[in-house]
Amino acid sequence: MGKRRIRTLTAMCVLALAAVLSMGVSPATAKPMPTVVLVHGAFADTTSWDPVAAELRGRGYDVVVPSNPLRGPAYDSATIEKVLADIPGPVLLVGHSYGGVVITNTHAPNVAGMVYVAGFAPAQGEPAMAALNPLTFPGSQLVPPTLQVKTVDDPTNPVGKNLDAYIDPSHFHQAFCQDVSDATAAEMIAHQRSLALVANLEPTQDPSWAHLPTWAVIPDQDRVIPPASERSMAERAGAQITDIPGASHAVLMSQPGQVAGVIERAAASL
Image 1 (cartoon, rainbow, N blue to C red):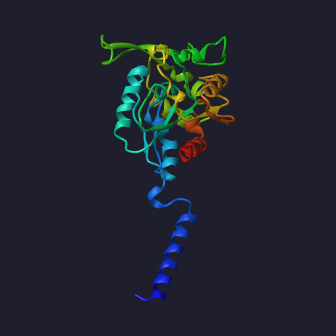
Image 2: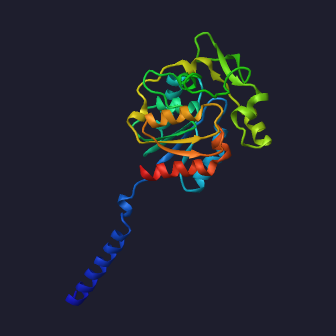
Image 3: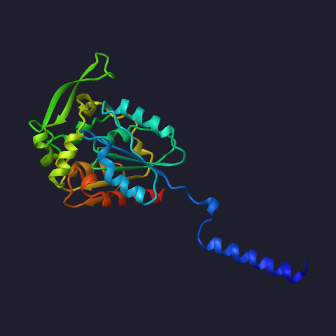
């Protein structure tokens, strides 16, 4: 091979390398996009995440929406941990409402960050009910007659039964999701799942937000968890906070684009 051809090939290799470097990162070292795991809260099921999941999948994210048993932080977080064990690569864990309690108590080596959406973020030894103390944070409508109790079959309980809390359907729209249409509220009521009454009384153990980067979405018209309480928990967790004016506790249903945007920004920073 002649010297001139060698020089030409060398120049071409240098230009190719420069082009790759100008992109900031080579394909071999590009950061993988995290899988987004969306954990639903009480008085809801996996369908409550449908609008946000659709937004994220449309933006190229792998999204997993496991069923939350709603039996208590220890039991529910163990269920989520089993799901996480089957996911390769990094995970961004997102919890709505009581789902925030669950992700707070979830620990898995592949979780790289946390997002709380109108969520509880309890501290060590703290039950979720502490965030609803009316003397400290007044305003929650999660009280009778809106909140009701019933006996349910529960195979996770040694006696096979449990006392569960649920929202009276006649109060659901105004207390839980006042910013969605009547049709959407009716669909949410049809998918309502009750929460074991003891779940909000079980203390948190080793909050995961203490060890991970954290974000929080606070809807300023939340009638379930007072926004001031959400802000106090988020600030304690060192979360990057996004306020959504005019949104209800069901902000994941009424403002899915904004919620997905926060999740996407969190994912991009991991």
